[in-house]
Length: 147
Image 1: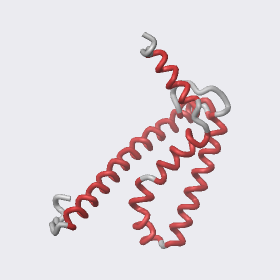
Image 2: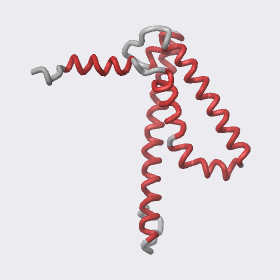
Image 3: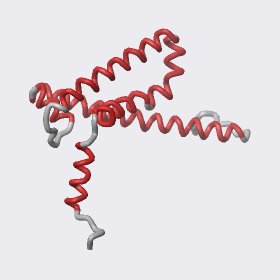
Image 4: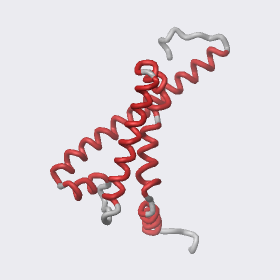
């Protein structure tokens, strides 16, 4: 029937959507989301209390400059040609060579794994704070062993 789509048509549609990601939505926003995620919203008060407002502002400015340099250079590399399967490893190995691409690909994998665990721990901490606040409102206290 005309209402059904084949697997190949859906795959072509997904590939077309992936090809249409530009500099902002394909590189900058995912990098910014990773930076502004758990670290900024759950740890900014702790960082400010330890380092002070001046050094925290300096840290944020350096991080922003690093992010801007990263996405602009990655955008320049990506727009240089067609990206095949392999994602970041393919881009790095094509640009810098296989030896450097392999080592950077391994570091990229380790970084993604650790950031995933950081996001899970941040989500658990946010849920713990919410549960504590909910039960504290009703007069229940926890000794810290459960939550």
